[in-house]
Amino acid sequence: MNCDVIKDLLPLYVDECCSEESVKLVADHLATCESCRKAHNQMLQTCQPQKETPKPAPLQRISDWKASLLQSVMLFVSFAILTLGVILEGATPTGATNGLWAVALIVPATGYLLSLANWFFLRIYKNRKIFSFCSCFVTLGFTLAGYAWAAIHYGGKISVLSPLVWVGVALSAVLCFLSKLLSNRYALLLGRE
Image 1 (spheres, one colour):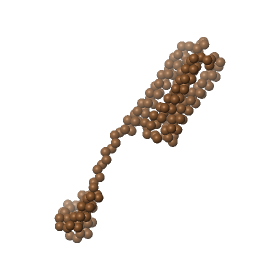
Image 2: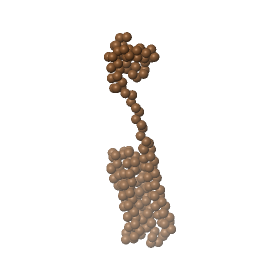
Image 3: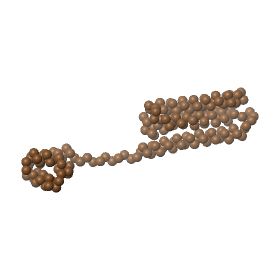
Image 4: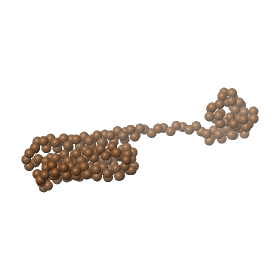
C-alpha cells in the first residue's frame, strides 16, 4: 500500500472514524512501515482524546436561593415593623401621642419597604458599588418623603423633641445603612461585580 494513502487515512484511523476494511489496511501497513508508524505515534501524541472537564457544582443556584431568601427576610422585617407601627398608631387615634408611632415606625419601615423595589432593577446598574449606594439613597429618599408627608398630615401636633421622633430618625438611619449593606450582599450573591 502507498504511504501517502495511509497518511491520508491516519487521521480517520486515530479518531476511529474509518471503515473496518480501512482499519485493517492501515494496521497491516503500520506493522511493516517504520515511517508511517512514526507518523501514527506523533499523531497519537498530539491528538490525545480530550477528557471532559467536570462541570462545576450548581453554586449559582444556591446563590440565587440565598439572594431570594435575603430579599424575603427584608420584606418580612419591613412588614413586621410596619404592622407594629400601625397597631400602635391605631391604639392612639387621638391625643398627644397621635402620629408619633407613624413617625417612629411606619415612615422608616415604609421607606425601606419601597426601596426594596430597587433590588429588582439590579441589572441596570453598572456594578455592585453603584447599586449599593443607590439603594441607600432610594431608602433615604422614600423615608424623607414619608417624613414630609407626616409633617403635612399631622401639622404641628408632633414635637421634634419627642423621644419617639428620635427613635424614628435612628431607625431610618439604621435602615439606610442596612439597605446599603444588604443590597451589596444581594448583588454579590447574584454574581454582580
